[in-house]
Image (cartoon, rainbow, N blue to C red; front, side, top):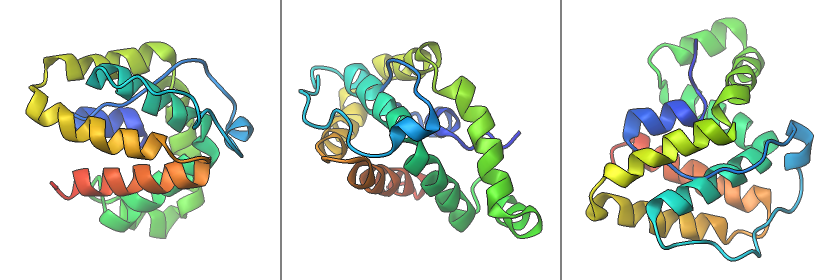
Length: 156
């Protein structure tokens, strides 16, 4: 499997972010809970909040994530697959994976990894995710999240 979705990203890079209830792809369009207060007392809490927002914004998030992965060829060979099969085929595969990766249970398991990380590794995540969560709509949030993931992929 591709394992292109957020769960795969978090496990590879030791990064996790936030989750609550499942939504459909179409529900991600438009404004989300950006104005709501964000719990910033722990990396775990901000992770759950950010991954929940990714799920709410999945109509925008998944295509942007697939495009990033293809552009960076991560995992290796995905660019070649996109050329052979088309990026839309990869996006459909990512959507299928995301059904499992975006459940409350998967998000909780993913974010729990942060509990074991030292503060010097979690503080930059908290700061970045807090900025991303301040976006008033999915477009701004996704743009920020993709920049965050690109920096993580690049080792920054």
